[in-house]
Length: 239
View 1 (cartoon, rainbow, N blue to C red):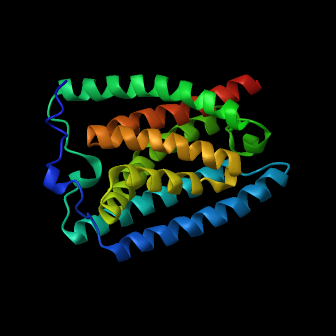
View 2 (view 1 turned 135 degrees about the vertical axis):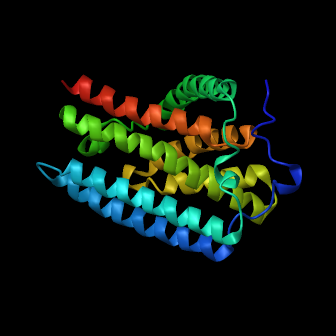
Protein backbone atom coordinates (compact mmCIF):
# COMPACT_ATOMS: atom_id res chain seq x y z
CA UNK A 1 0.00 0.00 0.00
CA UNK A 2 1.42 3.37 -1.02
CA UNK A 3 1.53 5.76 1.94
CA UNK A 4 4.31 8.02 0.67
CA UNK A 5 1.86 10.75 -0.28
CA UNK A 6 0.67 11.22 3.26
CA UNK A 7 3.76 10.40 5.31
CA UNK A 8 5.45 13.17 7.27
CA UNK A 9 9.23 13.30 7.67
CA UNK A 10 10.40 11.82 10.96
CA UNK A 11 12.07 15.10 11.89
CA UNK A 12 8.68 16.79 11.82
CA UNK A 13 6.76 14.18 13.81
CA UNK A 14 7.24 15.92 17.19
CA UNK A 15 7.28 19.55 16.03
CA UNK A 16 4.70 21.97 17.44
CA UNK A 17 2.26 23.26 14.89
CA UNK A 18 1.02 26.19 17.01
CA UNK A 19 2.06 28.11 20.12
CA UNK A 20 1.26 26.71 23.60
CA UNK A 21 -0.85 29.81 24.30
CA UNK A 22 -2.98 29.07 21.27
CA UNK A 23 -3.51 25.52 22.52
CA UNK A 24 -4.54 26.85 25.92
CA UNK A 25 -7.01 29.23 24.23
CA UNK A 26 -8.63 26.33 22.38
CA UNK A 27 -8.74 24.23 25.56
CA UNK A 28 -10.53 27.05 27.41
CA UNK A 29 -13.01 27.44 24.54
CA UNK A 30 -13.71 23.70 24.57
CA UNK A 31 -14.15 23.67 28.35
CA UNK A 32 -16.64 26.55 28.18
CA UNK A 33 -18.56 24.88 25.35
CA UNK A 34 -18.66 21.56 27.20
CA UNK A 35 -19.97 23.21 30.38
CA UNK A 36 -22.62 25.07 28.40
CA UNK A 37 -23.52 21.87 26.54
CA UNK A 38 -24.00 19.96 29.79
CA UNK A 39 -26.27 22.70 31.18
CA UNK A 40 -28.23 23.04 27.94
CA UNK A 41 -28.63 19.26 27.56
CA UNK A 42 -30.15 19.00 31.03
CA UNK A 43 -32.65 21.70 30.09
CA UNK A 44 -33.55 20.02 26.81
CA UNK A 45 -34.09 16.64 28.47
CA UNK A 46 -36.66 18.25 30.76
CA UNK A 47 -38.43 20.15 27.96
CA UNK A 48 -41.58 18.82 26.29
CA UNK A 49 -40.48 20.15 22.89
CA UNK A 50 -36.68 20.57 22.83
CA UNK A 51 -35.39 22.91 20.12
CA UNK A 52 -33.24 20.47 18.20
CA UNK A 53 -32.76 22.66 15.12
CA UNK A 54 -31.48 25.48 17.32
CA UNK A 55 -29.06 23.06 19.01
CA UNK A 56 -27.85 21.79 15.64
CA UNK A 57 -27.31 25.35 14.37
CA UNK A 58 -25.37 26.42 17.47
CA UNK A 59 -23.19 23.30 17.36
CA UNK A 60 -22.59 23.78 13.63
CA UNK A 61 -21.48 27.39 14.16
CA UNK A 62 -19.26 26.62 17.15
CA UNK A 63 -17.41 23.79 15.41
CA UNK A 64 -16.62 25.87 12.33
CA UNK A 65 -15.58 28.87 14.43
CA UNK A 66 -13.26 26.65 16.51
CA UNK A 67 -11.92 25.14 13.28
CA UNK A 68 -11.19 28.62 11.90
CA UNK A 69 -9.46 29.74 15.12
CA UNK A 70 -7.40 26.55 15.06
CA UNK A 71 -6.30 27.12 11.47
CA UNK A 72 -5.45 30.79 12.16
CA UNK A 73 -3.21 29.75 15.06
CA UNK A 74 -1.47 27.14 12.92
CA UNK A 75 -0.93 29.64 10.10
CA UNK A 76 0.32 32.30 12.51
CA UNK A 77 2.87 29.82 13.84
CA UNK A 78 4.09 29.28 10.29
CA UNK A 79 2.91 25.69 10.02
CA UNK A 80 1.33 24.46 6.78
CA UNK A 81 -2.30 23.37 6.52
CA UNK A 82 -1.03 19.85 5.82
CA UNK A 83 0.39 19.67 9.36
CA UNK A 84 -3.23 19.38 10.56
CA UNK A 85 -4.93 17.56 7.69
CA UNK A 86 -2.14 15.56 6.12
CA UNK A 87 -0.93 15.95 2.57
CA UNK A 88 -3.52 16.52 -0.14
CA UNK A 89 -4.76 13.68 -2.30
CA UNK A 90 -2.75 13.68 -5.52
CA UNK A 91 -4.48 10.87 -7.36
CA UNK A 92 -7.75 8.98 -7.54
CA UNK A 93 -5.91 5.94 -6.21
CA UNK A 94 -5.07 7.76 -2.97
CA UNK A 95 -8.71 8.83 -2.59
CA UNK A 96 -9.93 5.26 -3.08
CA UNK A 97 -7.33 3.89 -0.65
CA UNK A 98 -8.46 6.27 2.09
CA UNK A 99 -12.13 5.52 1.41
CA UNK A 100 -11.37 1.81 1.65
CA UNK A 101 -9.43 2.30 4.87
CA UNK A 102 -12.24 4.40 6.35
CA UNK A 103 -14.79 1.69 5.47
CA UNK A 104 -12.68 -1.05 7.07
CA UNK A 105 -12.05 1.15 10.09
CA UNK A 106 -15.77 1.92 10.44
CA UNK A 107 -16.67 -1.78 10.49
CA UNK A 108 -13.89 -2.83 12.89
CA UNK A 109 -14.24 0.13 15.25
CA UNK A 110 -18.02 -0.25 15.23
CA UNK A 111 -17.70 -3.85 16.38
CA UNK A 112 -15.25 -2.87 19.13
CA UNK A 113 -17.49 0.02 20.13
CA UNK A 114 -20.44 -2.34 20.42
CA UNK A 115 -18.47 -4.69 22.69
CA UNK A 116 -17.20 -1.80 24.82
CA UNK A 117 -20.69 -0.32 25.15
CA UNK A 118 -21.93 -3.66 26.49
CA UNK A 119 -19.00 -3.89 28.87
CA UNK A 120 -19.57 -0.36 30.17
CA UNK A 121 -23.38 -0.62 30.05
CA UNK A 122 -23.36 2.55 27.95
CA UNK A 123 -26.00 3.17 25.31
CA UNK A 124 -25.61 6.49 23.48
CA UNK A 125 -28.95 6.04 21.70
CA UNK A 126 -30.88 5.34 24.89
CA UNK A 127 -33.23 7.60 26.81
CA UNK A 128 -30.36 9.84 27.89
CA UNK A 129 -29.78 11.04 24.32
CA UNK A 130 -33.26 10.96 22.80
CA UNK A 131 -33.63 14.73 23.18
CA UNK A 132 -31.05 15.49 20.49
CA UNK A 133 -31.83 12.85 17.86
CA UNK A 134 -33.63 14.05 14.70
CA UNK A 135 -37.39 13.86 14.16
CA UNK A 136 -38.68 14.09 10.60
CA UNK A 137 -36.92 14.62 7.29
CA UNK A 138 -35.96 18.26 7.85
CA UNK A 139 -34.14 17.46 11.07
CA UNK A 140 -32.55 14.40 9.46
CA UNK A 141 -31.21 16.58 6.62
CA UNK A 142 -29.76 19.10 9.08
CA UNK A 143 -28.40 16.24 11.21
CA UNK A 144 -26.50 14.87 8.19
CA UNK A 145 -25.00 18.33 7.53
CA UNK A 146 -24.01 18.53 11.20
CA UNK A 147 -22.51 15.03 11.04
CA UNK A 148 -20.35 16.01 8.07
CA UNK A 149 -19.28 19.12 9.99
CA UNK A 150 -18.39 16.97 13.01
CA UNK A 151 -16.40 14.61 10.82
CA UNK A 152 -14.35 17.43 9.31
CA UNK A 153 -13.97 19.77 12.28
CA UNK A 154 -13.64 17.30 15.15
CA UNK A 155 -11.09 15.11 13.37
CA UNK A 156 -9.06 18.15 12.34
CA UNK A 157 -9.23 19.67 15.83
CA UNK A 158 -8.78 16.59 18.02
CA UNK A 159 -6.67 14.29 15.84
CA UNK A 160 -5.03 16.82 13.52
CA UNK A 161 -4.31 19.60 16.03
CA UNK A 162 -4.53 18.51 19.66
CA UNK A 163 -3.03 15.08 19.10
CA UNK A 164 -0.11 16.59 17.21
CA UNK A 165 0.40 19.24 19.91
CA UNK A 166 0.18 16.73 22.78
CA UNK A 167 2.68 14.47 21.03
CA UNK A 168 4.97 17.48 20.68
CA UNK A 169 4.58 18.51 24.33
CA UNK A 170 5.17 14.98 25.68
CA UNK A 171 7.53 13.74 22.96
CA UNK A 172 5.56 10.51 23.06
CA UNK A 173 3.11 9.25 20.43
CA UNK A 174 0.92 6.94 22.56
CA UNK A 175 0.65 9.53 25.33
CA UNK A 176 -0.36 12.22 22.84
CA UNK A 177 -3.01 9.92 21.39
CA UNK A 178 -4.34 9.10 24.87
CA UNK A 179 -4.49 12.76 25.93
CA UNK A 180 -6.32 13.76 22.76
CA UNK A 181 -8.77 10.87 23.19
CA UNK A 182 -9.43 11.86 26.82
CA UNK A 183 -10.10 15.44 25.73
CA UNK A 184 -12.45 14.18 23.02
CA UNK A 185 -14.39 12.20 25.60
CA UNK A 186 -14.52 15.11 28.04
CA UNK A 187 -15.89 17.38 25.31
CA UNK A 188 -18.95 15.08 25.20
CA UNK A 189 -19.62 15.27 28.95
CA UNK A 190 -23.29 16.14 28.32
CA UNK A 191 -23.79 12.46 27.41
CA UNK A 192 -22.90 11.18 30.88
CA UNK A 193 -19.82 9.59 32.48
CA UNK A 194 -20.09 6.16 30.88
CA UNK A 195 -20.48 7.68 27.44
CA UNK A 196 -17.49 9.96 28.09
CA UNK A 197 -15.35 6.87 28.74
CA UNK A 198 -16.77 5.09 25.68
CA UNK A 199 -16.26 8.12 23.43
CA UNK A 200 -12.70 8.55 24.72
CA UNK A 201 -11.96 4.93 23.79
CA UNK A 202 -13.55 5.52 20.40
CA UNK A 203 -11.44 8.66 20.02
CA UNK A 204 -8.30 6.63 20.71
CA UNK A 205 -9.17 4.41 17.73
CA UNK A 206 -9.43 7.48 15.50
CA UNK A 207 -6.16 8.73 17.00
CA UNK A 208 -4.33 5.52 16.14
CA UNK A 209 -5.73 5.66 12.61
CA UNK A 210 -4.57 9.27 12.13
CA UNK A 211 -1.15 8.53 13.63
CA UNK A 212 -0.68 5.54 11.34
CA UNK A 213 -1.87 7.23 8.15
CA UNK A 214 -0.38 10.66 8.97
CA UNK A 215 -3.65 12.19 7.81
CA UNK A 216 -7.10 12.74 9.30
CA UNK A 217 -8.99 12.20 6.05
CA UNK A 218 -9.97 8.51 6.54
CA UNK A 219 -11.12 9.39 10.06
CA UNK A 220 -13.19 12.28 8.74
CA UNK A 221 -15.02 9.99 6.34
CA UNK A 222 -15.68 7.31 8.98
CA UNK A 223 -16.67 9.89 11.62
CA UNK A 224 -19.17 11.64 9.34
CA UNK A 225 -20.65 8.34 8.18
CA UNK A 226 -20.98 6.99 11.73
CA UNK A 227 -22.70 10.12 13.08
CA UNK A 228 -25.04 10.36 10.07
CA UNK A 229 -26.05 6.71 10.22
CA UNK A 230 -26.64 6.79 13.99
CA UNK A 231 -29.09 9.66 13.75
CA UNK A 232 -30.89 8.28 10.71
CA UNK A 233 -31.19 4.80 12.21
CA UNK A 234 -32.52 6.16 15.51
CA UNK A 235 -35.12 8.27 13.69
CA UNK A 236 -36.28 5.37 11.52
CA UNK A 237 -36.47 2.95 14.46
CA UNK A 238 -38.57 5.46 16.40
CA UNK A 239 -41.14 5.44 13.59
